[in-house]
Image 1 (cartoon, one colour):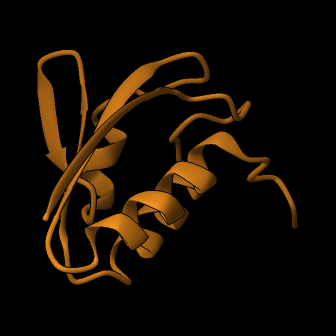
Image 2: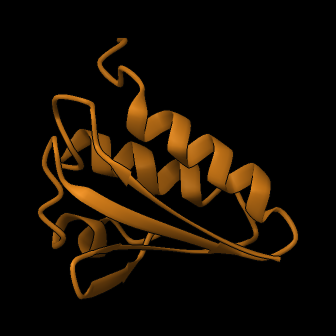
Length: 89
């Protein structure tokens, strides 16, 4: 199964430093291949260095693609993370 969604990042931190690491750790919990893109750049969502190179700030439009048996589950969790309040601790 393959799923792709485009969203606008609404959390105030975007995908920098700690949020990027949390996103990568969450993506790593799933067997599906997960990629994230901003503009023409597509990176592995399970690599923190790759995710940081996107420069995905609050308001950035990104696309997430999940491919595999647990793609729906992975997509739901990642979308919830990106659109929620990640500054909970």
